[in-house]
Image 1 (tube, rainbow, N blue to C red):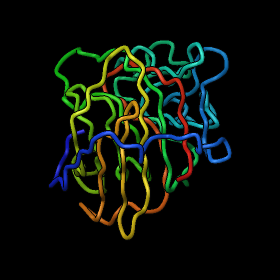
Image 2: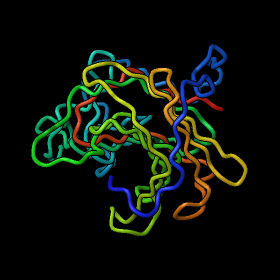
Image 3: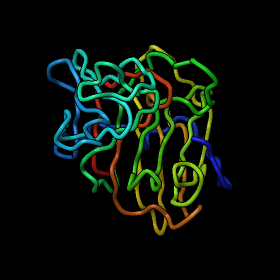
Image 4: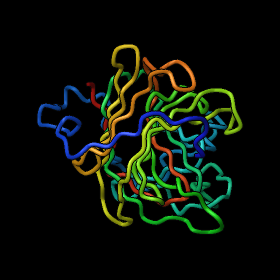
Length: 251
């Protein structure tokens, strides 16, 4: 996920309760609560998105690259590889490059909370510093989105904006903010990503394991501020990962 163009203000704050979940976040405020309950097996994969009606579809998720499994009450990427999956992902997952978004496309000012574990990084061949686990917000298309890096190979947290036009799958990335944030492979972590319209711009906050890591502002970098609504989801690059819970709450 190479950053292009000029980054704007880099921000990092100390511990803060402003972006930390509280008891006031009741079930009635939750817009989505995915706990990955059910039998083990494939939830959905890229084959299903490319062949409507012919694969295993999920009522909640669209996977445009890779495979999403359920394993012992958790979401799982499967062992990452570069093999195109068939209807059941039995011969390959293609989860080296994983992209998953919600079917629902009208999430506005929300907190996305993800309980995750990076099981391992895939170190086959040359890899990039930005490999890791990321959270999509305001996702409109593969070329128009905000993405928050919560666990990267280089221990950097970042908020990036992608706009249409450019050499990265038809778009260009702009770094809005970044800060150091260590992530332990094989351990469970919780990331809270807040996105909200503020005035004529957009504010994105990241908290990991109760520690406020950074705040970013989109005031028009690379194009109009990404106000309004969109999908949310997960991006992962060259990692095997587990998800214990994925929730979206109204702010």
